Amino acid sequence: MAMVLALAPGSPARAGYASVVVDAGTGEVLHAANSRARVYPASLTKMMTLYMTFQALDRGRLNLGERLYVSKRAAGMTPTKLGLRAGQTISVRDAVLGVVTKSANDAAVVLAEALARSEFRFAVKMTEKAHQLGMNRTRFRNASGLPNKHQLTTARDMARLADALIDTFPHYYAFFQRQRFRYDGDIHHNHNNLLDSYAGTDGLKTGYTRDAGFNLVASVKRHGHRLIGVVMGGQSERSRDRHMMTLLDRAFAEVRERRTVELVGPPSEKPSRSLRVADATGGEDAAPTSQGDANARALPTPPDAGRPAAVKRDGDAFAHQPGNWAVQVGAYSRAQPARLAAMRAAEKVPNLLTGTDVAVTRVKGTSGGIYRARLRGLAQPRAMQACRLLEAVGRSCLVIKPGGGVEVAFQANGNG
Image (cartoon, rainbow, N blue to C red; front, side, top):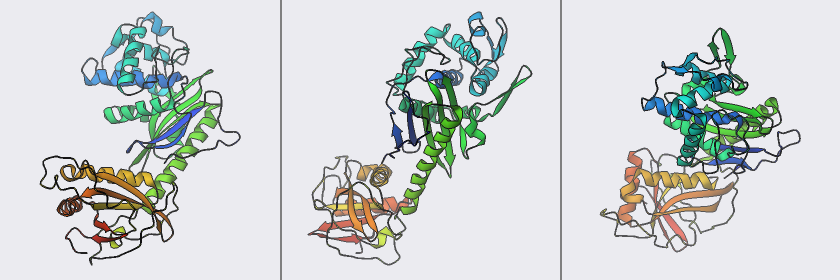
């Protein structure tokens, strides 16, 4: 469920303000504000310039040690820049590091001209690539992010681009972690202040123009969990950074809470059986639940739990036997992680569970609401086999037989 953030006085809200925080592992949006509004990317544009460069490196069109020619036009770019001179050459590696750390406009144009002969042609290719990545509200007009009223993007599109950079080019992503870069006797420091001030930050890019405001895309990984944050339209560098850290703090807290309240555990040593009257209370928010073993209890049955569901006809031995049995894969304090748990379980045993009915039902627990994650519409043998296979790959589960307002919880061996 998306976080709702009311911006406090003094936060970096302005006409072009937008922000989003995305869980890179699941794609879930944890916070969003004006995230689909079209705004100016400023030097966040260079993330796509680097994407195109990394793609060319992988395809053998460039290599990191190759020397690139600096045109008069590239040398004439306005700051920030490395101060390249027309007629000289620069290695691809140094051009990339100049773009990452200094946000050098001259180096960005050198890369663009090397790949498409002109910056204009390169911008066309940038836009084509953006649309291939699903960045449908983005248009590029140059490689640097210098002001152009037709160059527009959204916070969500920038988060999508960041995720694509991390996922597609892990072997080049370390460039974004460089905090300083020496070139021609000068040391250039990375503009991304979070690299040395916010734990777990390992990239990506800042941007600023007067019309765009102060922009930042940040990737932060803690305890194996990566979040991508985007803030656009900040009033100052400092307030933008503080705002980003606030958004990420809240998002990490939400992720941590979900892990804490997850009730899935290993099956109890003794098979258990429990009956309870159904109580399917609706609602979106749920208080944290008490800790316990979800597999040692049977939870109330929703009114439609016995309804047969559509089952994918996949040639499996049990595929033609729909029924009202279910496999429960967890109980959570929020709906979204419950839904994700059910979908992931289905992916673990696709020949048995793909095409079943994913059911997330809120019921009353001892200390608040509980969202149960189930895959329904199964015949008994199919449900038993699916649960055994899930347990074999480390996923705890229960086989549920609803009926008549009560339900019985079975372990995968069929004991109630």
